[in-house]
Structures are given as structure tokens and as C-alpha cells.
Image (cartoon, rainbow over all chains, first blue to last red; front, side, top):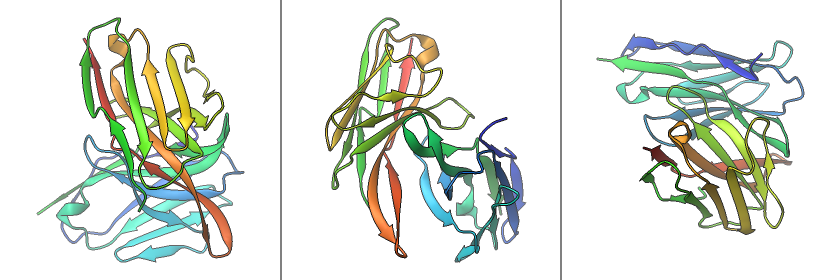
Length: 112
Length: 121
């Protein structure tokens, strides 16, 4: 089983739509959770951290369910500029301690 | 935010040559740097973790003799792909970790370089 699993999509939505991405992780000892955004042929950039209580940043809402080992990202009122790949990321055990482990990413395409 | 640079941004080389990629933290000291690799339409895969002044720790399945990592200072780590072959063609991304505190707790934030696209002919 992969450490971080996401539905790869693509999700094709019109401007203004609400879209939700889901992610599951395998290591129950993982401590920190994030959503990153990656544009084509670029490095990933931190979108937001994910907290157990849920957190919101403008049009973006992230939630974490530790019992289910499940993370979600909700994007409201989608913009054309939201088109990108969204990476679910977990800070979890690596050979050297802890490191960010990435899901494969979910591709979002927002059209006018 | 903190800035991490990588050089070169793109390299094309012949099979059998070695390629060195540099990763620098420009405005902070990074005791730990990470090297990732991303194949097309795949996730970033952690290759190794390097701590300043010590040997790198490689993830399972990554050949340490092929991917040489040096982390000689708090602001510089290098990855050398030795005797590169076409299957090594990939997007190599480094990241550097800083320590910050937030809400009374401590967390490590990783900052990513812009990546190096390697093409081996």
C-alpha cells in the first residue's frame, strides 16, 4: 500500500464550481499534513497546512480525520488560476527520521 | 519565505557522464536537506536525506553509489548522478528544512528549490 494515496483525476470543472479532493495515508504515526500545489514543470509550493480541527484559507478548506487517516481539500468558487496539480503531503517516518512524503497528486483543470 | 536555489535548472548530457546538481539555502541555514526525484505524472519520491557534516541516508531502492550526496556546509548540498543513463532522466528537486515555532509547538518547514530537469541522451 502506498504511503499517501490520492485520486489522480483529472477534475475538469467550470469557473465558480466547488471541488473536493481526498487523500489517505498509511502511517498512523504521521504528525503533520499539508496540501501543496504544483504547476506544470515547477517545484511544489505549500498551499496550506492541515489541522485536526480543520482550517480555512480564503476559498480553500482543509480537513483531517486522524481516525480514518483521511485528508481533504475543498476549493470553493474555482478560478482559472486554480488549475494545477494538488499534492497531499504527509510528514512521516523516513530512513533518516522524518520527511515530507508526497501523494501522486490530483490534477484540476478549471475552464471558463 | 525562505529561498532555496538549484543549479543548473536544466541539463542535457550524454549517457555515461556524471552530472552535479547544487542546492543552496540562500537566506537561512539548513541543517537538513532532502533530495527528491519526480518522473512524469508521478509523485515526488524521496531519494535521500542529508545532514550537514554527515553521510546521507538513502531511502530503500536508491543506489547510494550512483547518487552521491555531499552536504559540506549549512547552505549547500550537492547531488551527483554518476554515469547517468537515459532512465535517470527526471526532475530532481531539493528541499531544505528550517526550524520554526508556531502556536507554542515546533514544526519543521521544508522549502523547495525550483528543480533541475535532467535529460540523458
